[in-house]
Structure formats: C-alpha cells, structure tokens
Image (tube, rainbow over all chains, first blue to last red):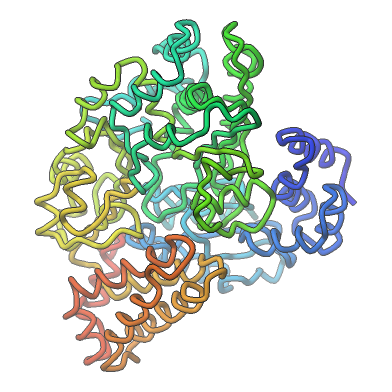
Length: 157
Length: 442
C-alpha cells in the first residue's frame, strides 16, 4: 500500500513512543500516507490501522477529527487560506475572494484541470504575517497581497 | 529580524542571523549553562522548583497559572514513568509567539524541558507542535538531533546520571488540542477530546502517568530563571507578574509582529512599538489576550498595562499575550461572526451545550450580520452563552461565549443598528479599505 520510504518514516515515528504505545504514531502515519497518496482513501486508513495494531475505526476517527487530512481527492496543490479575525483585519478574507476569482472556483472546489483545490483554513498561528496561506499542508506563505498571490499561482502552474 | 522590538528582553536576545537557532549559536550566547548549573551543581529538585516559584513565572499559554506551583504538584518520588509535555499547539487566533520561539530559539525550550524533567523526576518529554507550522516542526526535530549529539539529551546527561528523552509530535488541524488533556489524548493517537478533571494530569496524565504540561514560552523562560535567580526574574516584570513576555500584535497596526516587553508595560507603549494604528486611524477596540478573551473598548484599553492583573481589572484576560487591534473601519458584528464561526467549527462535539450552543451562536450572529436579525436576538445570544458557560468539560464553551458577551456589552448599539436597519453602521467601502489588501483603494 505504501512505499518502503514511507514505511521507514512511519517506523521512525513509532520509535518516539513507548513500545506498547504504537497508536501514538497514528497522526504522523496518516500524514505520511497522505503525503504519498495525495489524499487518504479508506484502504490507506485501514492499512495504517493494521500497521499500528489498532482498530480501523479508531484510525478513521482520527482522520475525520483533524482537518488537515483529506478524505476526498484534492488537486495537485491544496491552498488553505486563513480567514480568521486577525487575518481578516489584514486582508485574509479579501485574499480568499481574490483567489476564488482568479481560479474561478469556490472554497472546497478544485480547478477543472485538477491543479488547485481551495480551502478556507482556521488559525495557522502566523497572524503577524497576514494574509497567510498554506500549500499542501507544508509550505506557509506569508504576506500574500495580490502581487504575491499572482506569483504563487504562476509558480504552481 | 526575529522579534520586531523589545524592552529589557531575555528570550529574544541575540536572535539575529540565520543560524541563531542552531546549538552552536545558542551555546555561544550562554545556552545550556543553566542546565550545567543544575546538573553539575547537583541542585536538589526542591531548589529548582523553589527558584521557579520565586520568579512568579505564570503560565504563558493563556491560563496564567503559577508554574512553580504546578511543578510542585508532580509526585516526584512516584517510582514509575513520568512525563513533561510542551504545548506548542498554538492555534488561538492572534497568537504566534511560540512559532517564533521555536523558529529562532528552539534550544531554550529544550533546555527548559530538560531542567523541568530533572526537577520533577520525569525521564521523557514530548513537544506537541501545531500541524500548520510544518517547517518549524522540522526545525525542532533538527534542534533535538543537535542536542542529542551534544549530550544534552539522552542517557547520563553531562555525566549526572540523569536520563531524559525528548521527542516532537505534530498536530494536524484541531484547535481543541491546545487544551492540555485533549493534547494528551492526541499524543495517545486518539481524537483530541478533553478529559474530565480531576484527576489532573499531575496524577493521571499521558498514558495514565503523572504528567506536567507547560506552554512553549514557559519552558523557554526556565533557563533564564535559573541563571538570573528567581527574584531577579520577578523584578524584571512587576509584582505578582514575573519577567518579560512576548506579545503577538496583529490586526490594524503598522508593524504587526512579536514584541518582548516586561510585564506591566503600558499598552500605549506596546501599540507605539508596533507602529501605532494603521494609517493613523482611530483605535476602536482591542482583544488583549487571544480570541477567547473579552474585547476591551479603546479608552479602557489605553489605560491598561500589559500584565495579568491590569488586564483582568479591565474585564478581560492577558491570555496568551495575543493583542488583536481593531480600528474604526471594523464592523464589530462581522468580527464577532468570524470568531463565532471559529468556535462552532472547532468545538470537539463532546459536550452538548458547546456542540449545539456554538452552532446557535454562529447562526444568530450570522443572521444579524446578513440583515436577518430579529429584535430579541441579543437576548437569545445572552441566554445561549449563559447556558454554555460552566456546563462543559473544558473551557472552549466559555471561550466561545466570552467574545459574544463582551462584544454585545460594549458595542450593543452596533448590533442593534444591524438588526433594526439590516445594514452596517460602518460603511462597506471603509471596511474594505481597512484590510489594506487592495492598496489602490486605501
């Protein structure tokens, strides 16, 4: 189901916890699986549960509880825009609207070419850098004014 | 630069340059000398805890609970596993100080955690890092590797016979995991749903073992307390409010960012350091301690000093030190609508009053904002908040209610205008200009 590199990464996560607490690695393991597969299909969740010797339903509960897991396919790039109050005061909502117009899609939608999915995110803990957005759960982009957004979109093409 | 401004700083000293976060730089500026003092000087555990008590270091995550007292609750002589856990799940809207501490001074957190582990007889620790700041998580892993290689972590640290292992655990998008028992559930690989207290984590924490959880900035302050002495640290702040604190200033200011100042510094000074209100506009209100803290109108805020007691006297909370500044372009109904949506979205769903109540709060504020408010909506909101508060396992329900109560208390006219006239008191064009996103329109 997962590549040997991903399995090796999961093993490194398991080693962080006491030997009888493998389940502690479930959040990291699901994140690693999502990184490889692009999203989390049911089989991947079941595989992770089996690998960590936990009930599949418990792994599914984790996957549905934390909002950075994608339980449906997303575009090659997922852009999450923070629109919470501190960001809103500095253009977070406007940045979201600007992206919607540029991409011709709304939140939770993907461009027709499958390239970009747009999400409305919650506080990313970077309010001083507002407007902020995160690409594929990994790369935080700060001070995203229209010019910076245009640059990002050109880069992702 | 890491921190935009400071008065008599400790945490943010010497953080310029790309390598300030590395072990070599940290050691050069005195890093790990506190750990040496403790371990090589064979300081009794009791004495370390007493120094922290004397410093009156209060928890920097939001609750402001005295750290030394919290440490003294740990059953040090309990023979089994014990844990120290760092709460870096920084997701309180307005707060972004722990991100900068981990980014520019991660070894201060590691050193603080090792000292804490020694003082409480714990052999293992975890730092739970907000999933959204992935690059910072990766950097912390690197800092841990440096500390291990240098012998500041692992077995027999500095030849003292004390063993301490420390690992990083990342979140993946759940505000509630900033609540300490939800955070423990999350480390155990479960949904982050808070536990009933008591039992408190000091007796039943991670994996059911005695555990102490402190905020990132709290741990980072510990080496400075050990080096300076508790009393000198206290003197750096103000009575009952020891030390300096990082304040995250966001919203309508010219220079949003982190500022380190002594507790007790006037709000006016902090505002000035942040470049003042954007475009010289008029201050309308401020949320002084993160989104869960009650809003304070401009006039009262300008009278405050930035410490636990002064902000509490003004009817709010210093919380995490997240200062959200709002100027005259802000529609208070819209601001509250966004906050209410956040709590509705982030309620873990465990307690009925919070799960259902946060949904009601959002829906009612939403309809007021969108011109469908009803005459008795403000009473309805008040009734919903009083039926949430004090009736839930954790503080999220209270955190969702306090903004609603305070926004309506201080800006009732604005809410009433929305309901009566079905539009905003603040012209839409002015609101748009306020965000500064489309520069041409300013």
